[in-house]
Image (cartoon, rainbow, N blue to C red):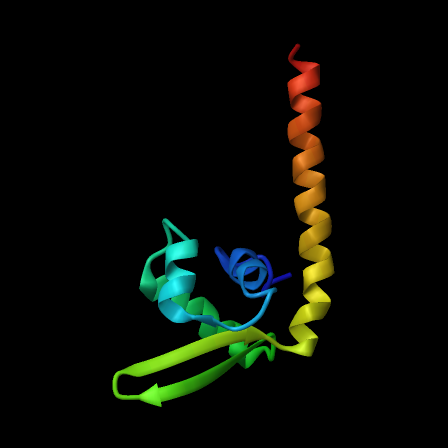
Length: 97
């Protein structure tokens, strides 16, 4: 819970679910998160073996991130959370009507 409950952590994993993503592309997808915050969360996820970092080139530096097999085990939890949040949103619309 400590790892997945971190701010932006679930969103980062969710955006990496379809394959490797370069850092700047990820930062654009996470509109509102600072690059410093994204970097910190990616380091935490890498240390927890949920995300793999790969350096593609060094000049200029190009890095991609992708979900590890272990990290994929968390995607089911995130999908369930997404479904729950969407059903809650639908419920609140009908309850307020």
